[in-house]
Length: 159
Image 1 (cartoon, one colour):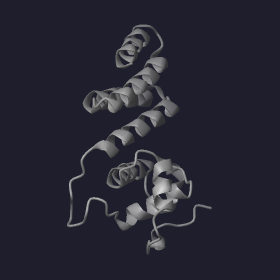
Image 2: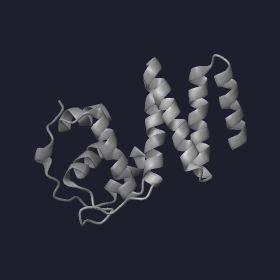
Image 3: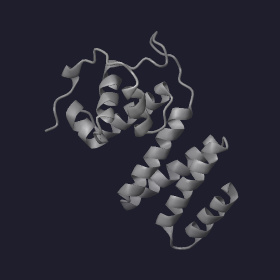
Image 4: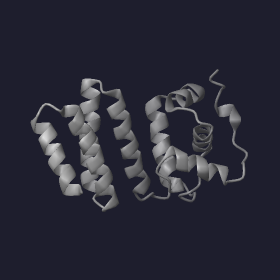
């Protein structure tokens, strides 16, 4: 499967199907992740992100960011500042809770007075800490966890 996807990437890139090449690269990255080729997968994802940003392909960029998050969730987490690697900071708990409520990154950014990029960065850390690789799995994990004393004053209602 990986070799077929590599061939598809080469063929689309050689022709004029650059958007199709981007999609093929993301599929190749996903396949590489499943067989342990995370370094090569990361290179393909970064190529797609740069291309998408250059040509204004927002949806392709979003897909690339999602694959990048999946890669980030697989990476090791260095324990920092005395806490366990699965302990979420108060800001991370707020963002995770808002994801669990179905809010988009843009809505979360507005509600927490953060940039969308910062929200994406927090989500990558949250995914890694909790061992999940998607928003759906994060929401499921939150639903199975008893509520805590999340400092709700850290965000405002986006409505």
